[in-house]
Image (cartoon, rainbow, N blue to C red; front, side):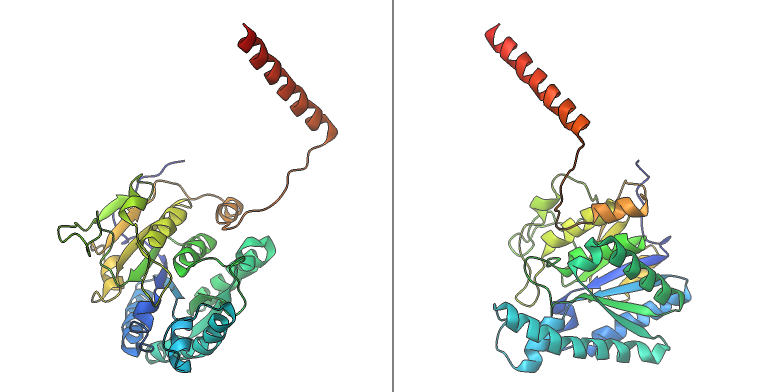
Length: 314
């Protein structure tokens, strides 16, 4: 079912806000406490306006690398997991300090692919998040990089942000990055590149516009943000990709200002179970049919083969 695409986020009452490693850790130099304080102040303003916010934050591995004194991001999985364990301590404390002046408590939630693919754990995660929001607490979500492997990894926090958006049935996903938004070509190579203010999440040229990988600090790029927008759109949510360094970006978005790129959705919200099925990142399973169904399929295939054979000979 199709719905009329929204023009801005002024009607949103539940946001999922995702910020990348480059912003959280000042390009890997360490947690940018000033940036966190600015986002916390904006979220406090949103709360006063009746808008609830869930925060999806990258930065644990980058912060861990900095604390461990490593010169560059390691490639070995065990070292990445160790860095995440060290960095997560600092990330949680930094957000608690940022929100404390506003009288807002935060809660750390680390999710894995299994938490979102298993139906029971998925429902438990949703219940926990809704309870935290009901008590005025801002959940700070990250993937649990200390236990995930390539085989069970969600991939990046842009994807995680979209999955959380679907999980809690948020009105919109806001991805704060170090770029202004989506351009019609790479602005680093083309000085005439034009910022796109509004585009349908199902536009056929999105992937080609978003080609390229992320920074040395994070794992995402504009491509992952576009795919996240497409995933969020399936459940009827809009997505905004904007610069996290833009002054009062969250407040301005809720006021209806055009900031960054708005990816619109023409899908109506679907029921919770279908949302869960649509959100599967890695698919596996089997189909079991009874004898009658197996016989019917075999007979149909045999009939099709006979028809094709007769047409070929004719």
